[in-house]
Length: 205
Image (cartoon, rainbow, N blue to C red; front, side):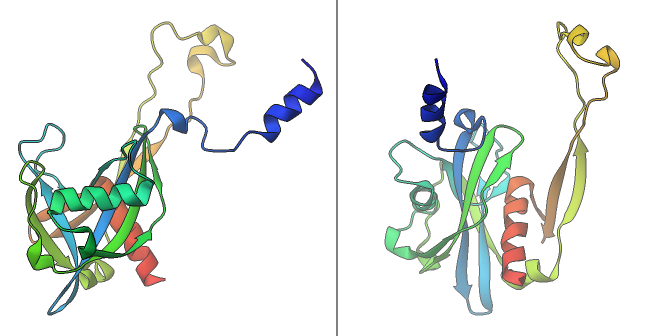
């Protein structure tokens, strides 16, 4: 092996997020609809029949499939499948900042206008109900933020003898901010609330 070989490898490398090849990739849509009193944000309540997070409030979205052209097409596909609408009903699809979850997920959020909301027919296998909240509510009401602290617990056979400080090593701990919005006795929280908060920040700028 020589420097020319190493240089050729570096030249052909496209940087990405280290370890991202092991992440699960998801696309999410923030649906906006026009009502008589203005713009509303549409939410889903996950079906109680679902194995993961039944009954929780979320946006349309799901795992990016191999057949999806890109993240945007995945978000549109999931929205069509979950809300039972046609592709023509979705317009003005814009990307938001993508997110990296501490639980091994990359989330690609988008915002879009949903036309003819009266034609929405939620897929009962995935969606228990849908509801909307006036956009100004979120502009006028900041989310509550709570902190979750993670505890460091190395596995039993961790090689403490190989690190300075050994078992007394000063680990860098981290906290996760959980966002909560409350509206009419509904709790919008977790990644949904964090995506919503980011969307609102863009609107306010």
